[in-house]
Image 1 (spheres, rainbow, N blue to C red):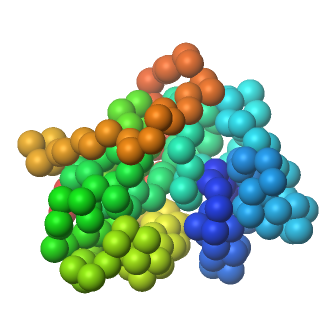
Image 2 (image 1 turned 180 degrees about the vertical axis):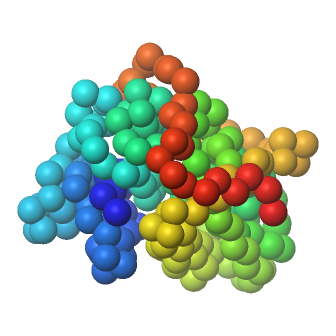
Image 3 (image 1 turned 90 degrees about the vertical axis):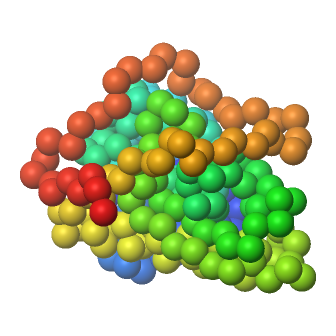
Length: 215
């Protein structure tokens, strides 16, 4: 598959390696200037952009993959691909929507955590689920331990798993259970970056894929 990867830090750089090792072609990267993901892409001669707006998204790719990206991917950007965009969120969505999900998992004393790969749409962290997994939370852990020991490797596995499903032309889209949703605010002052302000309807999947919408 032809993939556009948006992300940052070690999670994004590791996703870059894992996606390529799984046989997919990363055709473009969006990452902050000087970031580990941008450096990895430069090493492999993959074009890098530092801000995602629709006019900068390469046309013709199959999918945008967000790996530790805090940028809102607009429908205009998603429409430039065949399938749209997926992202990894380190919680069992719809629980702990928001950018500090791991910290809130620890703050709330959750005995079980998990990770979700979901389809990006116009609702932040609200799109259909493509894959999920769960783990126990060691009561001795802080948020860094939970991320490092469980949720980081879980996210890498789930992203590769979803790409494998899509390569087989199977699209899993399980609606989130809105009655169970929680949203916690960011623990810093930063807000989700929205480089594209114009929002248009989300793209369809009209390319011969089998779409799964229920378990």
